[in-house]
Image (cartoon, rainbow, N blue to C red; front, side):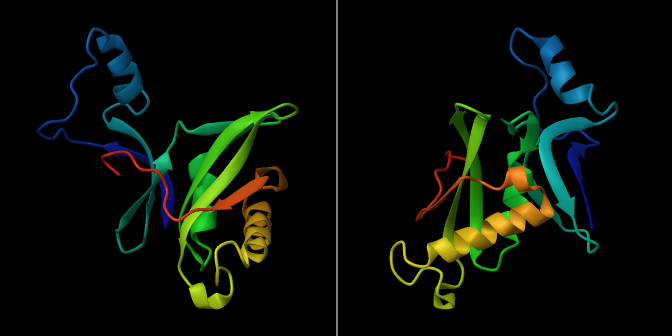
Amino acid sequence: NISGALCISQAWPGMARTIYNDHKRFLETYLTPYPGFFFTGDGVYRTTEGYYQLTGRLDDIINISGHRLGTAEVEDVVNHHAAVAESAVIGYPHEIKGEGKMLSFWPLKHLSRGYCTAAGSGTETLAAELRELISKKIAKYAAPEYIQVTHRLPKTRSG
């Protein structure tokens, strides 16, 4: 059980070879961070059985009161809660902190647990549990100010 940066040791057909009109940037972004490996920019978790789980982009950072916090780090903690199937953390402008963060998650795994028996009901209990979980696993400042239950997360065409 280990987490880290996802790097590829061998080339594969169709992989990027450069960035149009900026080969230096390609080298600095993908080949310089881990010499001898192609750096994908993603975080990864590997189990003792050898399975890999992508944990998110390593460059998605929110700056909260001078603390740099990766969105994937918070999402990983939230996704370990029994009721949450998937989550996304986003930042928003905050007058005092610079950036705040909002957490959206969907769908809830166990509707029978009383978290979401009807639209919006029971989510206050879950929100409190998630804030407490994040506070314990990461830090108090990492707990999101707003938690929004959605039916689905916005996705790009590739997911």
